[in-house]
Image (spheres, rainbow, N blue to C red):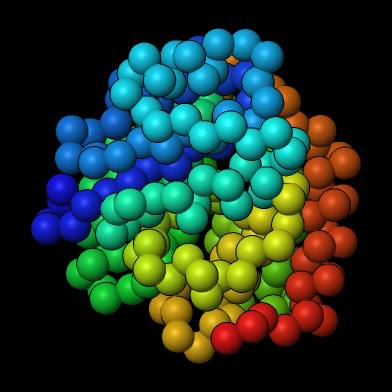
Length: 227
């Protein structure tokens, strides 16, 4: 419990046995529940997560979005916190993010990595891709979001059904923010956080994923969100 709220952490994983161990062991003591979504890993990700007390959900359909859509509806906590299983997002700032959510009476807080405090934590090509996609978000939706691709979100679990998520792939990261921003009943803001070098092997196909994300932004621009 944190400030009388139960907190669930959701971590999607594909072959992250090393990283997920680091993440779970680093989580603050007030976390009530850890949900790890094993996205068809071929290593010991699920076994390691279970040994460390996480509830593991198997999602055989491959994809970042598919994994999140399997895990997010299953949380039991009042507040949902998400992060990758590679140690890049700051578990040490979860309390700050929750404070920001509660103190400002918000529904959804997205953890913004930019400007990076450690330039070595992200490849230059990744920084450029994020900049292009965030600029496209500004142009298409007229919203000055600092980090459209962040994978760390903190929100009141009760709003999840209103987010109406569709993507099975990487675009879910931008979709969840845009749907939150556009929904008249959801209050959205960003909170700046640190970003750490990843643990383990990089699995993103940056050019393919980047192009897919850009096309999905265009699709979202001309698609309404169900209230």
